Every structure is written in C-alpha cells, then in structure tokens.
Image (cartoon, rainbow, N blue to C red; front, side, top):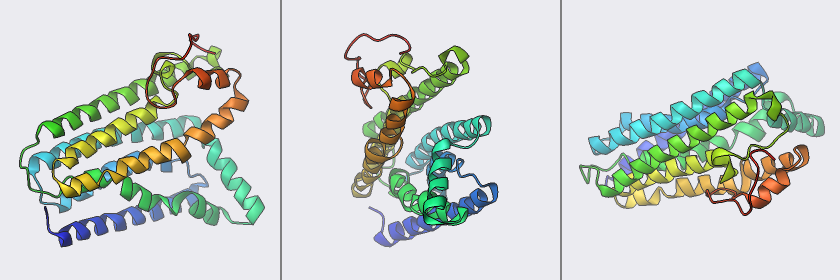
Length: 275
C-alpha cells in the first residue's frame, strides 16, 4: 500500500484540478450563454483524472498504462461524441428551461444560475466517480496486471462497444425523418431503455476491478462506480428524461412497461421496432 501522505497529496491535487476546470468551464458557459458542453467534460474530465494521476503517481507501470489507455479510449470517444451532438443540435433544452426558470423565479443572473445549478457541485462528484482511475494507479504491487485486472479490462472494452453501438443506433434512428416523434425500441434499445448508461457502468465497474487488484485503496474506490450508479438510477437523466418523454411521445409509457430500465433483458412482451 502506498504511503497515506502520497495518497492524500495526489487526491488533493486532482480535486484542485477538478475545481479549477469547472471554474474555467463556467466562465466559458457565461460567455456563450450556454452550458450544454459541460456534459462532454463529464467524459473527458473523468479520463483527464487518469492523466493527472499518471503524471503524479509511481505505481505499477503496467497497471498505470492499462488504466490510462482504457479511461482515455472511453473518455475521448464519448466526450467527442457529445461535443459533436452539441454542435449539431444546439443547446440542450433541459438546461435552457432550467436556467430560464431559475432566472425568472429567483431573479438570478445567468452566471449565478449556471454556477449554482450546473457547475457548483460537479467538481467533487466527478472527482469521486473517478476514484478507480486515481487509486488504481498508486500501488506498485502487484507489479503485473492479474486475472481480475484483465477481466476488468475486458468489461471496459465491452462497455465501450456496447455504448458506442447504442449511440450509433440512436443517431441513425433520429436521422430518419420518418421516425420523428417515435420511440426507438429496436437493437440494444429493445433490451434496455438506457444502453448508454449501462455501457458507462460496465466501463467504471471494469476500471474498479483493475484498481481492486492493488488492495485496500483500489477496493475503496468502489465508491466511484456506486455513486455513478446512484446518479443514473435516481437523478441524472433517467427519471427526469423518462417523465418528459412519457408526455411527449405516444407509446413511451408502453415502452417503459415492457423494457428493462438498465440491465439488458428480453422485453416483457413482444414489441414492434418503433412504438
């Protein structure tokens, strides 16, 4: 186990970097009067925590390089995809409505509303979620990645492929104007309503398995994936997104009734390609 002082120092530096990055992004959002791009930093920033740790730590080179490659591949793929989506489709209506409502109801300026509702709490959350790629790089033992670590790496690769496939299917579905107002209920979306979230969880629980080989610090980093799971299930995206779509799209309530929320599972009853 690495010295406690080393762990505290690296985690502290990374937390400071997290806070600084969100302050900079907040300033950019104020200039643009749009905060949608912050979603891309959730992927890029989590991968960036692997980079900042890699530059500070002195752990097992093989494990450090594996974590860096896996986190980097996931973060770049997802972050660049979200940036492309933002530039293609414009501001996220959820952010626009939320900030406008706060400005009108509370009299806040755009900078105050965006800081308090979007940026203020995200730095510590991102730092906590990324614990596996931080703590997993600190220990020098075991020197080589073992069976558990390679199983974790395989789970990460599976998660990236699963999520990438789901995103491709969604982009292709939305590109067809005949599908406007319809619900995507084919491909991976037939088996889970949130294949992208499931892919993310595979990635971060996989990274935790790589980190867990280092002993206590790596095992403790399970807090990161568990926090991510809690956010998906209770707060971020799932509940609010589905509530809105239930009112906006005919057939979405039926889609919810027959389709697993997160874990891929055969639908409860036969469904059409698009409801």
